[in-house]
Length: 182
Image (cartoon, rainbow, N blue to C red):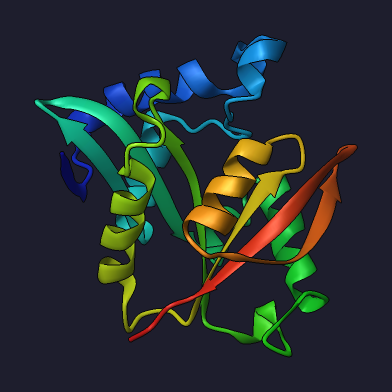
């Protein structure tokens, strides 16, 4: 498995993986295995790649997973993420409001259904930590309360904390946070 920064040649495969896992494209049974709450365009993928990082897990040229990471400033343009970022004033992480940290937004992350539970999430996460070490203090993410598969993978699998949550358009989300060691 190869874990690396995405290139423009990867974008069409990322978009296909995204479409396969987007909440509006899944039936009720498939939602239990995890889903994406947001969709991006090819242009937005390029902007994400240039902002903080867009990483992929690939095997023999096939994209099996991706992880996005962006600055709060970039993600403020999306209403769901803007709502999350506004909540950072009232959510404490190690006794301080999340907003007081040099923080970036982790996610979304998506792993091909056939490769979940095989270490791809951890591999992408470890590459990300190497990419951002010394640049940020804390990473923050959100997971829909309707997506326990993702919550378990991030809290139990990667050791992220869940210091609070927020509501957006009738849906409830957990905020996850993790420290970056430099």
